[in-house]
Length: 335
Image (tube, rainbow, N blue to C red; front, side, top):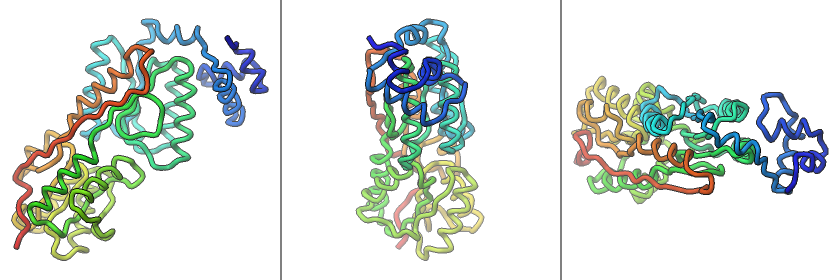
């Protein structure tokens, strides 16, 4: 079995530097040295058994969870499921808000590694940027090499277990229903374009509508109510004859409903509005919101279950289905 000294010798660094990289020390290590140590670990297939055993002991009771924004109803529900399973297994959960900032997400991964948490769960959407993905995956790989567990919610390009919400299929169902009801001039309030969740939902919607939408019919927002309101106002001003607004989450759909109400546009008689996720508020707004339901608490519960599962099972993928929930905000396209 290779030793820490073997790794240090192969990487051309001191054993102390190799130890800091492998064990996730909070002491800074130059990126070039870090890369050499990780390469040596991979080439020698070095496994730090003592540290892996330490992580497996009962006192390793902390799990780190990185979300985009826990005040977002989507992440509040996912976190509820994560915490339920963690509590059942006697674990403490640390919640980290990245606010969709990849650099901050990377910092959190490093800090959680340094704290030697038992598992890291990335509960926010993945990113398209290959550079960002490579950096995060490198850090997660170093963490996993010490015996840590990794689980993600959504489509990521990282190693570890994954729970995938059926974003594309849910949006496809929505597009088909709009097409069945005769909607052809459809505006979209999209989430941030850097996220894989946004891309998946847009792709499914285009497929369900059987035609790609013109770029001017799509407005990008930040998954908030105010962002949805601003984007809806832009769509109403820019797209004559708009008959439907698709918001890629329910918070933005609520903002769209507010703008239409303020402008005296009847919903759904003149413009239909649909959302995504089926947050609790979706049934309480007026008119009640047609949306795609994802079992968000179940997403979180499944991710935590995978993260805390026996160490001999890795890189599993579970898909959580979506369903269309029809309510009063969607009707036939006006003649």
